[in-house]
Image 1 (tube, one colour):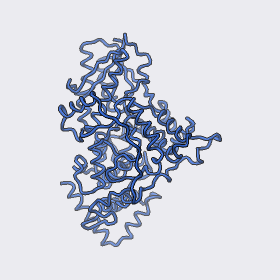
Image 2 (image 1 turned 180 degrees about the horizontal axis):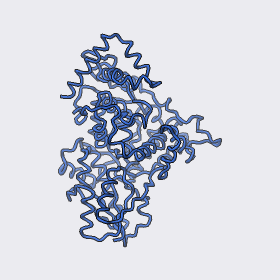
Image 3 (image 1 turned 30 degrees about the horizontal axis):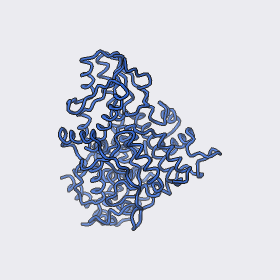
Length: 509
């Protein structure tokens, strides 16, 4: 065999560089469903089914092309990628192993060490699934005092001529319509979102579901239903439905939340993008065409494109730029264990129960639920950011290290001390009350910081301000909160801190 081409679970694209000189007469494919990747960290059943079913569908497509595919399923009990490679090498002579750059440095380091130990050549190809060239982010970063997404986003907009008018200016004379995209739903609730395309599990996916329930039944989450795209055809159907049905109102309400409404007007495309069933460029082009056709307003289209061209490319650049440091980051010195209710949703706090329950049921939460509910509580509570990171990596269907790590440790937990974002994203329960109807169904009052019906978010928010005032008082957007803390009567401040200690001791049991 000339090349043994290793395809990972998030590399399911037929336009990958690994196929450019693939010769079915000389080269073979290797795909491995490993037990370790499902258990370390524990992977939500929804996420596990998605990855494995998508891999099996992709391997079937490769075989239909006439490619030789060495495929290990869960029933083969292969514990690691290295063990799977060894199984092939035990029976076949291989000149070189080829792979596309993995989405996690740990995987790259482990495979590189093992393959070199076998005295084999390893060729790692660039991942062409992004809008950024290899090394481009690091080059852009050289003359920057601090990386900031907004300027990277503008750079990419100009480079790719995305929403740029004939005069070289941003469409609508503004780079960013974020201020228009923060509307709550109001008392009437959300407008009826567009229909979800019918993604019914086929026989292959049903077989995967049965294997997960039989072979690794103790994984968190539920498989009462499953509706994620596992092949490109399904992903394209989901893209079409978003552009026609949900994009028009996506901008206005992208930050809003509502009781028992997990999807609303969001795209649900992140897992398809991260498994590479869709290319970001085709998704961006579809949104732009909707704007040109008058089917979606500029604030919705720009806001959606910013998530893909801006944040997605930005966090990937940061992940690889600081790849040696992420595992040690804990700038706020938080060390508490993540509360047990993150694994079962068993809490009286309605916003957390709603957000966590839908993760367990669907493997999904939109960006505000992740940042300003599950992430916010972990931050204010003082949870160990590495535990928070492992929970996010395992529980969400779209989680791959390159996108999850910077978002969790940087944006959500401020463990990076401001590399990704300029400030900790903190708020009291009043923010959740303003952006959702969760508080209407909760025994706690978001306006109350101490006492029996005090909202834990509000209690922990003010305690966080008291504890971290040395960080906050020097920040132009947060220093006023420190003043507000000291404007409270001393008795009230003491009651809040006392309430915090009671709350933490209760949650730690």
